[in-house]
Length: 156
Image (tube, rainbow, N blue to C red; front, side):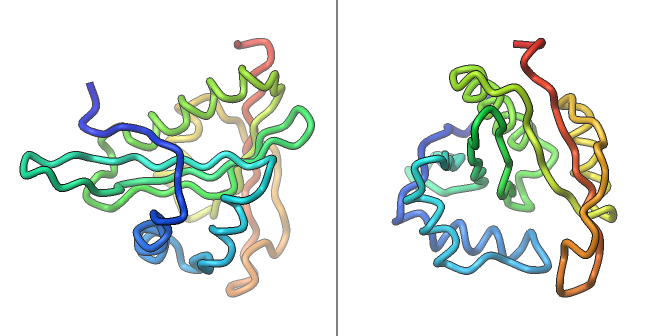
């Protein structure tokens, strides 16, 4: 049983999400971007909350996805450094797979930096396969993004 619970993200969660995002990415999203995702009709946003023995509740991870037609796109996913490699990201992805089934999604896509080998390994373990690249996807470095896909229609 995980020591965290998954809940829908709310505007009051944005400060904590921004903090995790700044620590996880070379180019963090702006507050406006997260708030816009919360308002989109095609977006689904979740946070993982942990409950400490002293009653303190903290957000330790988040995932933002969009469903467009029969495709799900992982827009952003991150886990607080102290909770990485503890199954949190896997739990977030499993929740997304359930959401995909509910919406009859046939494929799920994610972009990842080639140097992010731990994320690539996680996505492979979750059933994603390499699809191709998006040239110059990261404007601050000119780096390409790897595009990964999980075909889920036949697996659900």
